[in-house]
Amino acid sequence: MNMEQLVAFSPVISITGAALVVMLTIAVRRNFVLVSFIAGIGILVSLAAVSIIWSNSPVQVTPLIRVDTYGLFYTALVFIAGLAVIAFCYDYFKDREGENEELLLLILTSLLGASVLVNSSHFASFFIGLETLSVSLFVLIGYSFDRLNSLEAAVKYLVLSGVSSAFLLMGMALIYAQSGTLEFSGIGNFIANRQTIDAMILTGIILMVSGLAFKLSLVPFHLWTPDVYEGAPAPVTALVATVSKGAVFVLLLRYFLTSGGYLYSSMLTIFSIIAGVTILGGNLLALLQTDVKRMLAYSSIAHMGYLLVAFIAGGSIAPNLVVESVTFYLTAYLITTLGAFGVVSILSTIPAEAGEWSFYQGLFWRRPWLAAVFTLMLLSLAGIPLTAGFIGKFYIFTAGVDARLWGLLLTVIIGSGLGLYYYLRIIVVMSMSPESDTTEDGVHTCAWASSATLTVLTILLLWLGVFPERLITLIQSL
Image (tube, rainbow, N blue to C red; front, top):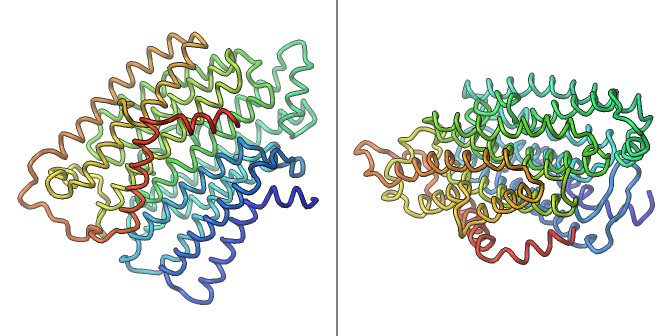
């Protein structure tokens, strides 16, 4: 590795260094405030490294990693999401019993895995990044070990993640056996030079997609999602819903664009069926929920289905339009989902997570600021104008129209109508008169870090909904 490659790899090196510094700090002195501060500074340094090398990309850092503006944008997005999660964790865990410093180390290692994942150009780095991310999440999901449902969620995620990894490895093995290479570009050259569809390559792609569909909680690989979202601590749920899913989707798109996966029309047909079922299944199941965290879990399933519509359009429209549509939607989704789970995190008490309706009834009268923020986040998830979610949904429609995916667009319309209903239902609950026995014992009343983060997320949500030009210009340059 020469100096140019070393500099290009500096964001990943920086986040690795931050994790090592946090680990050594924990060994010397246990102080949750200090460790949180060091972790936050480490992420800011890593973000600075991204901005420094932006103009010098692309750089191929060994065959495993390609540092380009596409990967750097998502690396920055992942780091920003991690910074928000650390802010939520600070207020969520600071008053809880036990030593919670390792939580920050695990968040940093999950960000390390995600940053490797979004810059991968080789099956080896793909799998290493994915497993680094997943192993960190196993522990984070079960971190509140004194709660039975948290441990149950961690075990379910561990077992099912192991199964998905087996599918991934088998798919990679089949593709390697036929193409003789593990590089995405090499696989693309092999597929482009074939006159007919290669059955082994197609089987390998199907197995890989099955493994990744688990990580994205696409139907029918979604069964873990509501239990994990409900059982994990609220800030960890935000990490799973944003960093984990976002990084995996970015990798999936890069692989298909680079390796020629779009040449297999049968694969796109399978994706179309999965997308339709995911959109309808996620929204219909969300209608039945009386727990806000489970409702947001099924909502996230539906949103992955919306993203698949733009992904599938890549078989018919220019690659840059696909990247633009997916990138804006993912950015809006990350901002909105972080904001929604940030509110849940603040409302969660030491004995219980803020899932039941009772936590939200009369919230407009008890805590109007939190209620207003949560309302904006829900409206953005529903795709209401003047929010970033509306622009993201518009991009999905535009990509679908350009690719003539009329059936999927009808599914998106139906799913959006269903989503609007259950999002409005929460808003109505928040506007009701509070129950006389409503208590806020244990609620984080002085959650300054979370409140500041929610303020920034709300400003971004509205800014991108009204003035999205700068972000669109940046995305178009990727």
